[in-house]
Image 1 (cartoon, rainbow, N blue to C red):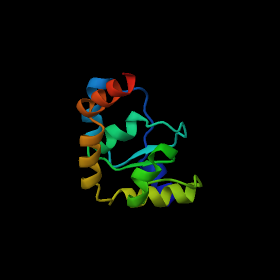
Image 2: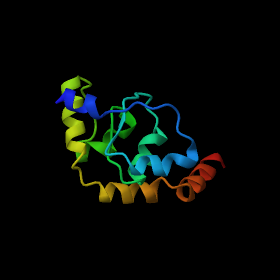
Image 3: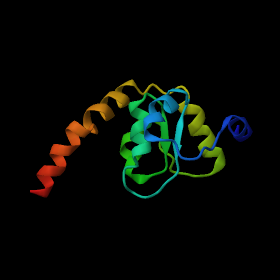
Image 4: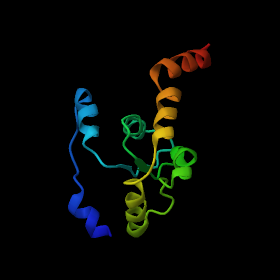
Length: 116
């Protein structure tokens, strides 16, 4: 299964912000193997665009685990299994939730309230 994804995977350089929606519309799945513990916007952008995102970042464990998209074991076999699952994942509800809970119009008032 790992070889299947190696043949179809593409690592790219930086994508200009204005091109991200078009770029994501061509993706089957997004993978984030960062363990920063903070919410990487690449995962949120992918989900907002309707692209299943898989991540090993603990910040996304609660959000992605119910969909089987959280990577808690970074072995190549496990990652391949989760990537395969992601290609058929129904993320309609997750996409809607991310759009409403993590939009700038929602986040900015929350941040301003914290700063007061």
